[in-house]
Length: 250
Length: 250
Image (cartoon, rainbow over all chains, first blue to last red; front, side, top):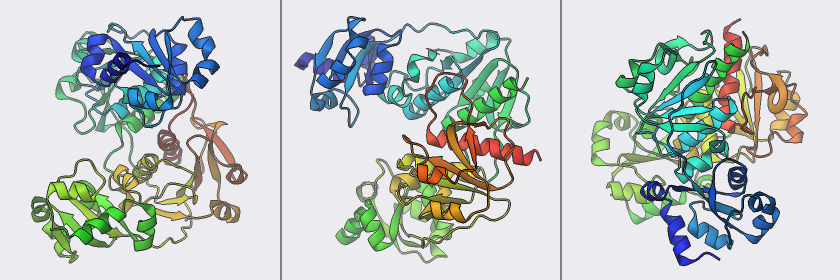
């Protein structure tokens, strides 16, 4: 059973300030918890219904994860999900280590993506398209926000990220830097290189001028109808799809 | 100012039952309300802050739309948005008329898309890719749900829809029917025809067997990483992007 102190601690992790202070974040729901237990993340506490615990004992026992059995009501009180009848894990955050682009690699750069749902969706898309590294401006949503973790559908365990001054990274790079704009080259006919950066900008304002100066190729998804724009998650998927298509065709 | 009865009426439209009973739905927020006032939808009541009304008088006056001036607090009490400092429109629903695919047209079929956010996003994507008609199974989310309208970012004014037995439509059609599956032909190399249907299935279960039998070409988005799946909105965008790319290249 969850103690009052445990409940209070878990609830504090809904907030970025306490996640940073404690170096821990929440993973919620059966699927995401199963994925995190099988990943290289370190789980400091698993809160689970008896049923989930029994079915997944194999995953917890070999890691010697501390476990508390809880009711569905307690799980929902502790966590952020409206409905969670399975489990919640308190997981240690990782060190913020710089990530370098290797040859032949596509690296995603998020320049001020503010919406946690968008960030989570983008991690899932990166994971689908084989992108393993995501560099985020300091102003991008916190990847450890429970909404991001939840929207990523487990992909947060397979994609690495770094937060910092992305201008500095771009300045030192000799790689191609593709940036999504409304007036760039048509991605249906563009021949993407086999590696480089793809920069996606803020939901309302796009890529910031201080980042834009390092973009070596402006790219655009052609429009056939009348919508003003595409959501940034959708645009990321379409761009990576076109990039991987041209690389594969070589 | 909003009367108690007006408030009650508007709040009832949060629910499908009352939207159907009254033949009306809600459009909320500055951008969406501006779009609906310029569309062929009929607005029966505009509730607006004084500021929004003054700035948009041109849009309401020529349609002789009844207007109530309201505070931000009242707007938020009446509507579904957490924050709305502009306006809300009560709009008449349209008749559910059958839509036929014209030659050279791509028509989207939604087979049991349950999430209103996904449906709204799909309308926006359809609008971007020039798809003007969307056929929905009866089990697909209600397009007049405020979350759908809001997520469509105004695209609901430019895309037409029909709800009904999609099997019947497909049965009578001689058009190509493309369906999204995990084991279909790679859309990066597939040569799409210039017209036809694209069927997207349920978020968890995909296309239903009774619809699947009419699919003439199974298509798949190639995966380069490890995510199990893509969100249905993302998949719709990537498929339409590939379809329009091959049609344009001809």
